[in-house]
Image (cartoon, rainbow, N blue to C red; front, top):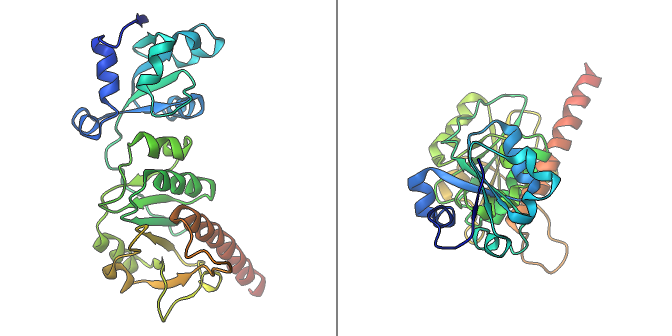
Length: 267
Protein backbone atom coordinates (compact mmCIF):
# COMPACT_ATOMS: atom_id res chain seq x y z
CA UNK A 1 0.00 0.00 0.00
CA UNK A 2 1.49 3.33 -1.09
CA UNK A 3 1.19 6.53 0.91
CA UNK A 4 2.24 10.09 0.19
CA UNK A 5 5.00 11.93 2.05
CA UNK A 6 4.15 15.62 2.10
CA UNK A 7 6.71 17.06 4.49
CA UNK A 8 10.44 16.73 5.19
CA UNK A 9 9.52 16.17 8.84
CA UNK A 10 8.01 12.81 7.98
CA UNK A 11 9.82 9.98 9.80
CA UNK A 12 10.16 7.82 6.69
CA UNK A 13 11.46 10.77 4.66
CA UNK A 14 14.12 11.45 7.29
CA UNK A 15 15.09 7.79 7.37
CA UNK A 16 15.51 7.54 3.60
CA UNK A 17 17.53 10.77 3.57
CA UNK A 18 19.77 9.49 6.36
CA UNK A 19 20.96 6.71 4.04
CA UNK A 20 22.99 9.35 2.20
CA UNK A 21 25.41 9.05 5.15
CA UNK A 22 27.95 6.23 5.10
CA UNK A 23 27.68 5.55 8.85
CA UNK A 24 23.91 5.09 8.58
CA UNK A 25 24.24 2.84 5.53
CA UNK A 26 26.78 0.72 7.39
CA UNK A 27 24.73 0.42 10.59
CA UNK A 28 21.44 -0.27 8.79
CA UNK A 29 23.01 -2.45 6.08
CA UNK A 30 20.88 -0.58 3.54
CA UNK A 31 21.68 1.64 0.57
CA UNK A 32 19.82 3.51 -2.16
CA UNK A 33 19.76 3.12 -5.92
CA UNK A 34 18.58 6.00 -8.11
CA UNK A 35 17.29 6.25 -11.67
CA UNK A 36 15.15 4.15 -13.99
CA UNK A 37 17.99 2.08 -15.53
CA UNK A 38 19.76 1.25 -12.27
CA UNK A 39 16.56 0.50 -10.36
CA UNK A 40 15.35 -1.71 -13.22
CA UNK A 41 18.62 -3.68 -13.00
CA UNK A 42 18.20 -3.89 -9.23
CA UNK A 43 14.73 -5.42 -9.58
CA UNK A 44 15.90 -7.85 -12.26
CA UNK A 45 18.86 -8.96 -10.13
CA UNK A 46 16.61 -10.57 -7.55
CA UNK A 47 18.41 -8.76 -4.71
CA UNK A 48 16.38 -7.80 -1.67
CA UNK A 49 14.52 -4.49 -2.11
CA UNK A 50 12.99 -3.03 1.03
CA UNK A 51 11.19 -0.04 -0.39
CA UNK A 52 10.33 1.74 -3.63
CA UNK A 53 10.38 5.53 -3.31
CA UNK A 54 8.78 7.42 -6.19
CA UNK A 55 7.93 11.00 -6.92
CA UNK A 56 4.32 12.03 -7.28
CA UNK A 57 4.68 12.74 -11.01
CA UNK A 58 6.41 9.39 -11.56
CA UNK A 59 3.55 7.70 -9.73
CA UNK A 60 1.13 9.14 -12.27
CA UNK A 61 3.18 7.79 -15.19
CA UNK A 62 2.84 4.32 -16.68
CA UNK A 63 6.39 3.44 -15.60
CA UNK A 64 5.70 3.11 -11.90
CA UNK A 65 3.80 -0.20 -11.93
CA UNK A 66 6.91 -2.34 -12.46
CA UNK A 67 8.70 -0.66 -9.55
CA UNK A 68 6.21 -1.13 -6.76
CA UNK A 69 7.80 -3.21 -4.02
CA UNK A 70 6.92 -4.66 -0.63
CA UNK A 71 6.57 -1.07 0.53
CA UNK A 72 6.03 1.88 -1.78
CA UNK A 73 6.09 5.51 -0.73
CA UNK A 74 5.20 8.49 -2.89
CA UNK A 75 7.00 11.77 -2.29
CA UNK A 76 5.80 15.20 -3.35
CA UNK A 77 7.79 16.35 -6.38
CA UNK A 78 9.20 19.39 -4.61
CA UNK A 79 10.59 17.16 -1.82
CA UNK A 80 11.88 14.25 -3.89
CA UNK A 81 15.18 15.90 -4.90
CA UNK A 82 16.21 16.10 -1.25
CA UNK A 83 16.46 12.31 -1.18
CA UNK A 84 18.71 12.11 -4.22
CA UNK A 85 22.42 12.38 -4.89
CA UNK A 86 21.78 13.39 -8.51
CA UNK A 87 20.99 16.93 -9.63
CA UNK A 88 18.32 15.77 -12.10
CA UNK A 89 16.51 12.83 -10.44
CA UNK A 90 14.26 10.60 -12.55
CA UNK A 91 11.63 10.06 -9.88
CA UNK A 92 12.54 6.57 -8.67
CA UNK A 93 14.69 5.28 -5.79
CA UNK A 94 15.04 1.75 -4.45
CA UNK A 95 16.10 1.13 -0.85
CA UNK A 96 18.02 -2.15 -0.85
CA UNK A 97 19.76 -4.51 1.53
CA UNK A 98 23.54 -4.73 1.18
CA UNK A 99 24.75 -7.94 -0.38
CA UNK A 100 27.53 -8.60 2.11
CA UNK A 101 31.07 -9.35 0.93
CA UNK A 102 30.77 -11.51 -2.17
CA UNK A 103 33.16 -14.39 -2.68
CA UNK A 104 34.58 -14.74 -6.16
CA UNK A 105 34.52 -18.16 -7.72
CA UNK A 106 37.71 -17.74 -9.70
CA UNK A 107 37.81 -19.35 -13.12
CA UNK A 108 40.82 -19.85 -15.38
CA UNK A 109 38.56 -18.86 -18.29
CA UNK A 110 37.95 -15.38 -16.90
CA UNK A 111 39.97 -12.21 -16.34
CA UNK A 112 39.79 -10.16 -13.14
CA UNK A 113 40.72 -6.68 -11.98
CA UNK A 114 42.01 -5.61 -8.56
CA UNK A 115 41.72 -2.01 -7.35
CA UNK A 116 44.37 -1.04 -4.80
CA UNK A 117 43.06 1.82 -2.64
CA UNK A 118 41.22 3.56 -5.50
CA UNK A 119 39.57 6.30 -3.50
CA UNK A 120 37.15 7.98 -5.88
CA UNK A 121 33.69 6.35 -5.96
CA UNK A 122 33.14 7.49 -9.54
CA UNK A 123 36.28 5.61 -10.60
CA UNK A 124 35.20 2.47 -8.75
CA UNK A 125 31.78 2.59 -10.40
CA UNK A 126 33.34 3.14 -13.82
CA UNK A 127 35.71 0.20 -13.34
CA UNK A 128 32.82 -2.07 -12.31
CA UNK A 129 30.84 -0.97 -15.37
CA UNK A 130 33.78 -1.53 -17.72
CA UNK A 131 34.63 -4.92 -16.21
CA UNK A 132 31.04 -5.98 -16.80
CA UNK A 133 31.13 -4.72 -20.40
CA UNK A 134 34.44 -6.46 -21.10
CA UNK A 135 33.17 -9.78 -19.77
CA UNK A 136 35.47 -9.96 -16.74
CA UNK A 137 34.80 -12.55 -14.07
CA UNK A 138 34.80 -10.12 -11.18
CA UNK A 139 36.20 -7.02 -9.50
CA UNK A 140 38.37 -7.07 -6.37
CA UNK A 141 38.59 -4.05 -4.09
CA UNK A 142 41.27 -3.61 -1.44
CA UNK A 143 40.73 -2.00 1.92
CA UNK A 144 40.96 1.76 1.45
CA UNK A 145 38.93 1.76 -1.76
CA UNK A 146 35.90 4.01 -2.04
CA UNK A 147 32.76 2.58 -0.48
CA UNK A 148 31.01 0.10 -2.75
CA UNK A 149 27.55 1.30 -1.65
CA UNK A 150 28.19 5.02 -2.05
CA UNK A 151 25.49 6.59 -4.26
CA UNK A 152 28.26 7.83 -6.59
CA UNK A 153 29.72 4.33 -6.95
CA UNK A 154 26.31 2.78 -7.61
CA UNK A 155 25.37 5.50 -10.10
CA UNK A 156 28.68 5.37 -12.01
CA UNK A 157 28.32 1.60 -12.42
CA UNK A 158 25.08 2.17 -14.38
CA UNK A 159 23.48 -1.09 -13.27
CA UNK A 160 26.61 -3.23 -13.70
CA UNK A 161 26.74 -3.17 -9.91
CA UNK A 162 24.12 -5.96 -10.11
CA UNK A 163 25.69 -7.94 -12.96
CA UNK A 164 29.23 -8.74 -11.85
CA UNK A 165 30.60 -10.07 -8.54
CA UNK A 166 32.57 -7.53 -6.49
CA UNK A 167 34.78 -8.68 -3.62
CA UNK A 168 35.54 -5.96 -1.05
CA UNK A 169 38.28 -5.53 1.59
CA UNK A 170 40.63 -7.94 -0.17
CA UNK A 171 44.07 -7.97 1.42
CA UNK A 172 47.22 -7.77 -0.75
CA UNK A 173 48.30 -11.21 0.46
CA UNK A 174 45.04 -12.71 -0.78
CA UNK A 175 45.77 -11.27 -4.21
CA UNK A 176 49.37 -12.45 -4.18
CA UNK A 177 48.29 -15.95 -3.16
CA UNK A 178 46.49 -16.27 -6.50
CA UNK A 179 49.90 -16.81 -8.11
CA UNK A 180 49.97 -20.21 -6.43
CA UNK A 181 46.76 -21.01 -8.30
CA UNK A 182 48.35 -20.18 -11.65
CA UNK A 183 47.21 -16.57 -12.02
CA UNK A 184 49.52 -13.92 -13.44
CA UNK A 185 49.42 -10.49 -11.82
CA UNK A 186 49.82 -7.44 -14.08
CA UNK A 187 50.17 -4.10 -12.31
CA UNK A 188 49.85 -0.80 -14.10
CA UNK A 189 53.09 0.83 -12.93
CA UNK A 190 56.10 2.74 -14.24
CA UNK A 191 59.40 1.11 -13.30
CA UNK A 192 62.67 0.05 -14.93
CA UNK A 193 61.09 -3.33 -15.64
CA UNK A 194 57.83 -2.02 -17.11
CA UNK A 195 56.75 -3.31 -20.51
CA UNK A 196 54.12 -1.93 -22.90
CA UNK A 197 50.69 -3.25 -21.97
CA UNK A 198 50.24 -4.74 -25.45
CA UNK A 199 53.10 -7.22 -24.89
CA UNK A 200 51.64 -8.93 -21.80
CA UNK A 201 50.49 -12.52 -22.31
CA UNK A 202 46.96 -12.64 -20.91
CA UNK A 203 46.19 -16.11 -22.27
CA UNK A 204 46.97 -17.47 -18.82
CA UNK A 205 44.57 -16.77 -15.93
CA UNK A 206 45.28 -13.12 -15.17
CA UNK A 207 44.50 -10.27 -12.79
CA UNK A 208 44.99 -6.65 -13.82
CA UNK A 209 45.90 -4.33 -10.95
CA UNK A 210 45.30 -0.58 -10.86
CA UNK A 211 46.32 1.65 -7.99
CA UNK A 212 45.48 4.70 -5.95
CA UNK A 213 44.97 7.89 -7.96
CA UNK A 214 47.89 9.69 -6.26
CA UNK A 215 50.23 6.92 -5.09
CA UNK A 216 49.73 4.04 -7.49
CA UNK A 217 49.99 0.37 -6.54
CA UNK A 218 51.52 -0.48 -3.16
CA UNK A 219 55.06 -1.90 -3.00
CA UNK A 220 53.93 -5.22 -1.55
CA UNK A 221 51.88 -5.95 -4.67
CA UNK A 222 54.41 -4.44 -7.08
CA UNK A 223 57.10 -6.83 -5.84
CA UNK A 224 54.94 -9.80 -6.85
CA UNK A 225 53.61 -8.44 -10.16
CA UNK A 226 54.70 -7.91 -13.73
CA UNK A 227 54.65 -4.19 -14.53
CA UNK A 228 52.88 -2.84 -17.59
CA UNK A 229 52.48 0.72 -18.86
CA UNK A 230 50.21 2.61 -21.21
CA UNK A 231 52.30 5.00 -23.35
CA UNK A 232 51.56 8.72 -23.06
CA UNK A 233 51.96 10.40 -26.45
CA UNK A 234 50.78 13.87 -25.53
CA UNK A 235 51.59 16.21 -22.68
CA UNK A 236 49.24 14.69 -20.09
CA UNK A 237 51.08 13.40 -17.06
CA UNK A 238 48.91 10.31 -16.73
CA UNK A 239 45.50 8.77 -17.38
CA UNK A 240 42.61 8.79 -14.95
CA UNK A 241 42.56 5.39 -13.22
CA UNK A 242 39.11 4.60 -14.60
CA UNK A 243 40.31 5.32 -18.16
CA UNK A 244 43.54 3.37 -17.63
CA UNK A 245 41.59 0.40 -16.29
CA UNK A 246 39.33 0.46 -19.34
CA UNK A 247 42.30 0.44 -21.74
CA UNK A 248 43.96 -2.42 -19.87
CA UNK A 249 40.81 -4.51 -19.58
CA UNK A 250 39.90 -4.31 -23.24
CA UNK A 251 43.48 -4.97 -24.29
CA UNK A 252 43.51 -8.01 -22.00
CA UNK A 253 40.43 -9.40 -23.75
CA UNK A 254 41.89 -8.71 -27.22
CA UNK A 255 45.29 -10.08 -26.21
CA UNK A 256 43.85 -13.26 -24.72
CA UNK A 257 41.62 -14.00 -27.70
CA UNK A 258 44.46 -13.36 -30.16
CA UNK A 259 46.98 -15.58 -28.37
CA UNK A 260 44.52 -18.40 -27.83
CA UNK A 261 43.56 -18.28 -31.51
CA UNK A 262 47.24 -18.36 -32.50
CA UNK A 263 47.81 -21.46 -30.43
CA UNK A 264 44.76 -23.16 -31.90
CA UNK A 265 46.03 -22.36 -35.41
CA UNK A 266 49.46 -23.81 -34.64
CA UNK A 267 48.09 -27.04 -33.22
